[in-house]
Length: 379
Image 1: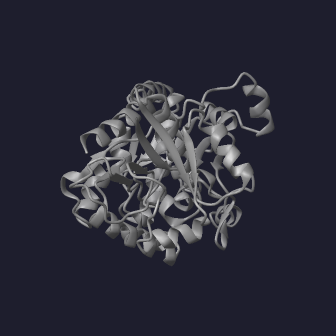
Image 2: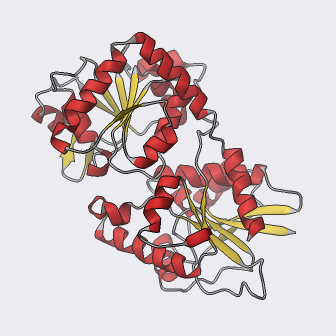
């Protein structure tokens, strides 16, 4: 019997984010694609009984759930300082750098192995978008991974290239991408949900927070540009970040009160409706490791405008309209021009929609899970 233990703690984080989604979808796919005689177990920090029950509900088929006696913060500190004891030996796959990285005897026990995932190089390139502790923790854990990890998974070749100039992992790096959740599909009550969300007939959609790296602020300012279309902007995500909020940025740009509206966190069903009905989806991020929202928009045939961040260009292929990030003062104007081009040309929008559907179909959680199983088999 072969057991693969997955670190799934991020699924229970207060704000799971993209990594929480990644951990959940990949683990579910690993369970579904497990080779004969192979089983998947989960590892999680000390949590409540309700949270343990939620994990078993989200991950049917999980052979076992290892529950640490330490809460997430304490477990994170323990792993950072090399206190890595886990029950049993064998294969460990961490869906982030939150991992028990320490010395292990691969020479005499090749089955004792650990792989970690590095989603992006933001802690090095844009540390100001993280807390000081968060940035230093990621850098410290990456150094531990450089010393102890048997393999490092990254989501794109762009991240692999960027990482190589920071920490050279050599041939330990594997590129394994993400995909669209199978739970993203237009529900039968789409009209009712659209009405409840007050979705306009035509609108621009974006996903993200107001942290500078996501570049939602330049996108809001683009609506005040001479090149801008007159469509409203809806933003999936919180209304504020730190001491700034959507309303104040919109007011500073001289926009009408109803021109920009945060939708907050959306369920998979509501997100599906919002993506499906959007006139154009915009991802203006200055830096990303993969960019799942792009292929989610592609999945629904929604035209996409995105920045020239290397990972986004790689993931989108030629299916989106690319906007250069350089010259930050002119970025809002270039975003506005790209959006107006798409929204003002129905034939172009239709071509982009079809190209997006084709591109989205190239990514699959099943394929990603099979690559993870092959990675551990190769080790």
